[in-house]
Image (cartoon, rainbow, N blue to C red; front, top):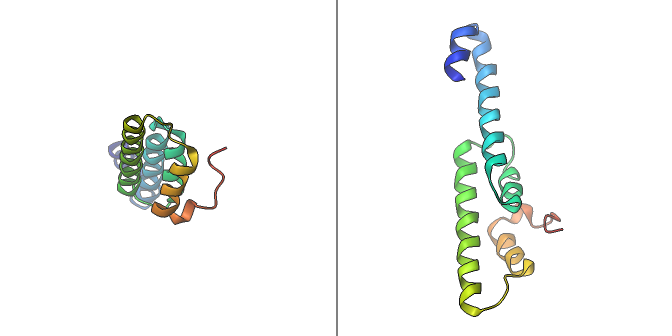
Length: 102
């Protein structure tokens, strides 16, 4: 898409076209995440965040969920929303007031 924008846009329009392409890439990335909770956390980084910020955040959250699920399996219990909520509140204070768990 970037290559096409360079070929068909005037020089002054390329910046806007690149902004649109970057936005579409980030939207596609977030939609491709299988976990709705992680989608919400990644979206909370804001529209101006770079794709690398989105990928780093998704990786951190997926790793945390994976580790907590493995811990739950070892303990034979259930991973409660409260426990995951407490972890995310510490890790991402900007989302601590959202009601994403309902």
